Image (tube, rainbow, N blue to C red):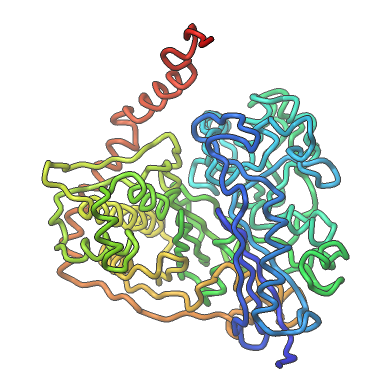
Length: 564
């Protein structure tokens, strides 16, 4: 049995948490375990049956503690190491995922009087019901020429801290006033591990508009809503912890949950996408990492500052010290593919897939791979979950053009794969047009297993794709930051050189297919600008019509004859 020092990384995703045991000396992954959230995503109703409006996405914080109780001990057992070999633990989270808590960290949803109040729960990153508040935040910031707005490409998202907090104030002021801390879950989980609340520099900069040492001013917040003036000082402001720093030592309670030694180093929290960059050895300027899963985050460090439209933030040292850290993203990618498979495929396809020993995704991929570029005659917009970059508008929705009576499920499936690649190319083009060069594209996340999807991305972006060498990129990155916090490496660059893992140029673009995709990309951009830049507001009108209809009782819901 090896007695080499190890670290644990815990990656809290959208539906589950994964724990990974990593050897400090070389990044060898010794054991991994996953634990699904019992409540998954609450987007229809609360656990007690309280219904939720459209565009809501909540979670239950106790599910995260269950990951510590189950996944960490299981990963340790699978690694075959002694607990005393572990010198540190690091965590990462989806973001912006926030919750209202008391001063001691107790989530308001755990108070019996608030169990049926939606605003008392965790608001997941894909909670998009604060778009109206985000629109006002952006309009006022533009009118006042707030300097921080340029760092976000001219718009902040409905997914972020301030929009969600303003929604809380305006829709449930009682919960807002009871909230003593408005906390990123990335920081809440660290709080539970070490007993100390330490906001991390990554979420503060990208999701909390913390730039040049300050949040938006009380004067600006009061202009949004007089009751919002004290939001920062009352519920948010706290000394910021830098990435790779220790937040504290593991408490006795957390040691009992995890099976780890009390007092080991707990690293400052981080975001799943950003923490993945060093895991993929992307520690130089211009190396973009696309972390592809239910959504895609595009993160890149650069020595160039540029006002890139629709960025989710440009933060000094936000990913690596000494470089500008950029974030962009697509709100729906794997989610879109899963939606189509659930809702758009006839039963006989599932039966045929089963007979061939394939999943339905694998079956549709195999059928789509037989097509030539453009053969299906379709073009799609990848906005089923709104647009994060570059339009920053979650009231936008999906589009599919070119349907005929001969269109087959594999045609639509391939068009959706291509649409997400067109979305990534739009983001890359925005970087380059703003004077921020993209030198390399590295792919991480579960979707790297789909070879057709990867080839489509290489062809559409006209770039070789490198692929992270780990199936657990965020957890590996969190573990690497824990190694730095525990003093095993001087900084995250040194840890990346020893512990990171990437396979270079795995998928190469084909010139003929790339040329064919250029023609389709031109059509995508026409639709993108027509529906997304104000020429046609049909998506926003439909959204309003849906909201009005949802607020009315269903036909026959009242005055229904009562049975005896």
